[in-house]
Amino acid sequence: MEKGVSSTISFALILAIILVTAMAAYFWSLTQIDRLGEQGRVNSFRSQMLGLDYALRATAHGDINFQNIFELTIPDGSIYLWPGNDTITLTFLQASSVIGRAGYQSPDNNCSNGSVDFIYDSATNIPLYRTTNNSRVFEGSKGGRGDAEFMICYYNVDLKAGGACAAGRGGPRVLVQMKKVNVTNSKPVVNIDMC
Image 1: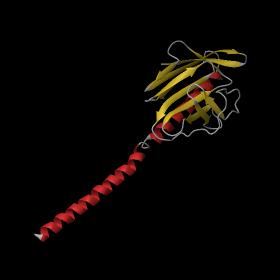
Image 2 (image 1 turned 60 degrees about the horizontal axis):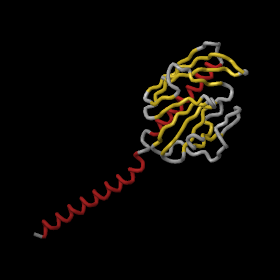
Image 3 (image 1 turned 90 degrees about the vertical axis):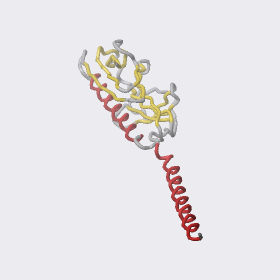
Image 4 (image 1 turned 30 degrees about the vertical axis):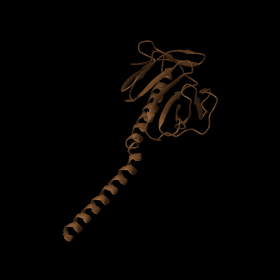
């Protein structure tokens, strides 16, 4: 009888060690699971906004009635045109801290010249910083998981809602139609529709 008790106790101890190890690995990886795929998703949003910035500037520098179309894939975000301050924002929830919080907060989202590196979106209360030196794209978050944003901010292009589609749209696919319609006060006027 002692032989059976000994092997039963050994089996129970080995099983307990395996269970404790598996639970420890699970709880350790639980904090890392949210990060899986998040970096790729945020990089996709960033590259799409940089592409939209390039397409908008190409449209603005074209002739009157020059048209351009750009397609975005934003499965769980929303994009909106703010014609009053010539900005386009893409807002979404990030599952982990991929985009950091800008340390500097400027008073508002005034991008009155091309040398501004930090702006503050008063609508979402998110401080933003410039993504790259040669773009008009800014990014930022409230810090950690939660609200994050990309913003394209123009000081030398007048953005207007075209009227054929909406000024804003949620994902998964958004077709942005751009058309240069005029030049006023030495600024090109571009109508934008998001369908």
